[in-house]
Image (cartoon, rainbow, N blue to C red; front, side):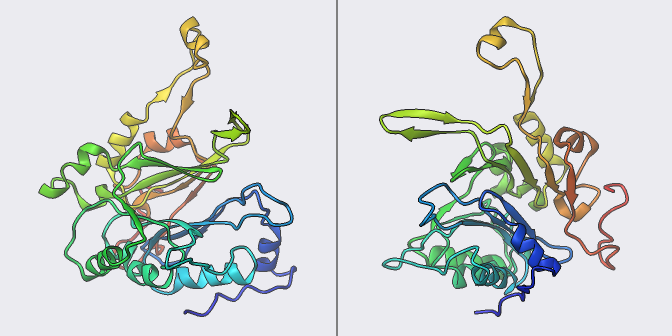
Length: 313
């Protein structure tokens, strides 16, 4: 097991202040420093329960470019009391990692995924990849771990798939079904096979209250979009499959409570796709998302790709 990332206990340090600021209802997004690659961890909000014995917090992992880093972060979160030690039962994972996603099979996104599937086998309940077959050793190593784990739920989701994890809702924005159906002919560029997601919390949902059901809707709902390496083609499908609904005075719209309009692509945080390349983002998309914060995972003016591209900036 890799050593934990040192997080000082001193509340006057930046790390200590950060830990002290994390509240049970917060969703915390970690964008690990891997240069021109992706490695992300979401610490999900704690679900309501017995205040003397609250349910453990869960994680979502999105990509693992390098070995050891995600494992070290998880161990640091455990040391800080934010997640619990793994507790498998009869060989089955405890689900403390509710979902792990390999967005697409480029090594700068999955170079450490095979190791993660090994070291966190006791935690990971479900694994997603786009189903784009690749020839690299990193891809084959990753898939051999998936095939060798009889308790791991596995899926190849496309646009529109939704997964609730407690109060958080993960919606798959891409790839489109039409792009997915072109994978086997390699009619889809590998970056456009990326699984892109929108994470909304606390999400509106129906819960069982005694003998009845109740719709829970929180006016403070917010969202973040993780763009993987999706490029122009993939985002074009996203923008048409998730249309913006405009406000209207139409009586029928008012009757079904659809008069206020909505945009399924709105998000407070955007993790810019393809490390800020000129093909990974466009003005129309950014205007629709309208993020308060944009994040780019790249090596500034790196010698190979020179991300983030001036056009993207």
